[in-house]
Length: 81
Image (cartoon, rainbow, N blue to C red):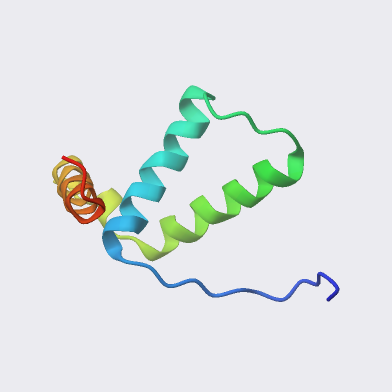
């Protein structure tokens, strides 16, 4: 299979989307994740941009609370408290 410019569609829950959006924002602000090449950085930038387009929550006044709710929901689903 050759890699081309075609797109891939992903489907996941709103809670996962919020947590990924927040996590990627932290990557840029804190630079704690080792990115070993420009392709990885571009892939993360594009994922963050796609999440930003899909989510309205980051622009809502109660965004912090929504992220906390998403964290609690996913933590409970994972089975770790």
